[in-house]
Length: 418
Image (cartoon, rainbow, N blue to C red):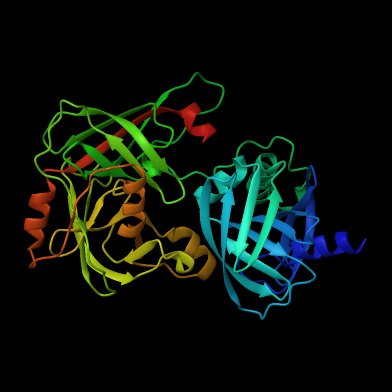
C-alpha cells in the first residue's frame, strides 16, 4: 500500500513548471504496470500535465510526463532519495545497449530527480526494451515494457484535455495514436486528413560537403523518414544522395553523393578551442520555396558553450536561423567549421511557460560530436587551424562550392509512423 501511495504522490509532484501542488488524476492511463492520468495545478485549477509511472524492484519509481506546453520529461523517484531542492545531476541513459543520451536532472522535490526529455530521446524511449541509467557510481536497469503505448496514451491525454477540458477526462489509452513527438520536417506541409491513400510530402534542409569523396553532413531530423533524398549546390542540377550513417542522439546524418560527382572544395573543421563571444556565420536554405532559391547568410556570436539544460554537445548562438537552416554549416571568422546548425529555441513553448518571448537563442552541434561521428563513419575529413580573419562575403563565397540544399521526399503515412 505504501508503494502505491508513493507512486501517486510522485505523479502529483511532477511538473516542469515546479508547481507546489497538483490535483488528480483526472481520467486514467493504465498500460501494463504503468498508471497515471491528467493533473491540474491546485492553485489555479488549470491543466498542468499528463503523467504515468511504474515501480521497479530496485525501489525506484520511473515517471514519464508531457506538460500542457508539449514538453516531455522523465523523473526518477524513490522514498530513499534525499536531495537538496534545486540540486542538479547528469544522468546518462543507454537504450538497448546502443542509443545513448545525457539528461540533466533537477531535484524539484527531495525524493525525485526530473529531467527534460528531448524529442529524439522520447522517440528512442518509445521503441526501446531496456534502459540503463548511470549517474556517478549509481547504475540502474529499467525494463521498458509497454513504453510505446504509454507514450501514445500520454500524448492523447494532453491533446484531449486541451481540447475538451479536465471535466471530460476518461480512459486515455482508448483511441491513442502514436504521439507527435518527432521534429517537423523543415518546410514540410501539414498532413492531410486520415483515411486517404498515401500522398507525397517534401521537406528541405541544408548540408555541407566534408570530403573530396562527396561525404555530406546534415541533421538526422532532416533525412529521417525520407524515401528519396536529393542535394544540389546553388545554380547546379540536383543529384541523388544516399544515407551512409545517422546518429539520432546527436542529430547528425552522413550522406554520400554519386561517384560521378566531383568536389574541388569541401569544408574544413576548426582544430582549436572556441570561446563564448567569438563571432560566427551561419549559412543555409531557410523557407526554401518561399524565400530566395540561393542560400542565406546570417551572423552572430557564440552566446554560450552549452545548450539547453547545460547540454555540453551544443553551442548556443545568436545568429538567426529558421526552418531549412537545419544541418547547415556554422563558421568562425576564418571560414572553418565550428558547428552544425540544428535548432532554434521553441519560442511559443517558452513564451507559454514564462510569459516572455525569447530572442536570438539558437543551437549548433559542436565539432567534438561531429568529429566523433565522422571518425566512427570512417570519413577522411580535414581539420584546419584558423589563420587570419575573412570578410563575411569571402566566407559565403567559399561556402558556395560545398553548401547544399537537401530535399527530402517521403509520404505522409511514413511521417505518421516516425
